[in-house]
Length: 361
Image 1: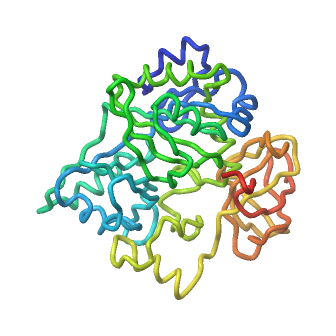
Image 2: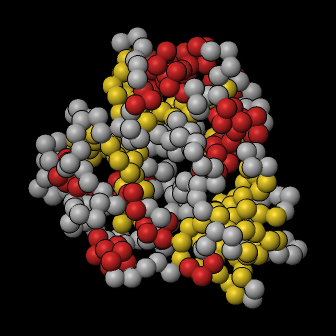
């Protein structure tokens, strides 16, 4: 299985590893998932997310090229700005969700490891006469810093200031002992956070300086990130986002510029927005049981099959199991009572709006 450049550092910290994502041997946890989860909600933690691979577009036509292919605006972005977008099939289904960052000499695209190869192939086939070069940045790694005190930690290590004012997906060029670091705002777990992109040669030094800056900095594993993500109601490619989902079904209107004109899948998305409506929507579910439910478990309202579970975890913040799932429109209202298939019997659940936690960022 694949590992990140910080594998040995994590191993020496006593990390427990497991396969997470497709073919990646990642840190499941360093201590215990609940403690790591709570550290992010109350203070600050750092985590290695170098498995989220980075594509790079260079060349004079890079912005114009990407603008005509993805669902959000690119040409209107300036250096240091960014946004969230989707790459769709011509039927409006999701090939990948993308974080797009405009740098001085390149556009960085961050995407899930399950979709990297598909994104590369899809973009590459449209490069014909454009002055564009596309590559996967094999020598770039990423450390994420999340939590109410994340800005304070990053500012101290990278000798920068006013990071709290940086909008989500916007970036700032920084340095660590003359080595480049691109700092991007990311609130994906429902707390203030920053993704720090740098060369793999610098990644270990960056990790160690973040850990050493304060005695209470907590290293975080994938399992805590998953419960944090679900609490925040953030969809993930491979669970909530697949090639059977249209963005509006996943409530991804913020990934779409409805004024920009044509892009792949635009007609289907616009038709659903202005002439119709989704038949199902992504919703949160609070579960009346001791344990989370299984992914892909069917959801029922009475005798009617009304949807399925995409992700589930125990929520340390709420003190109960929660889930994300797709539901038919008739049962998407907050407070709707549903039942979820279990190993032996159905368990009850209550539909809630997303995110589960409000006023976190």
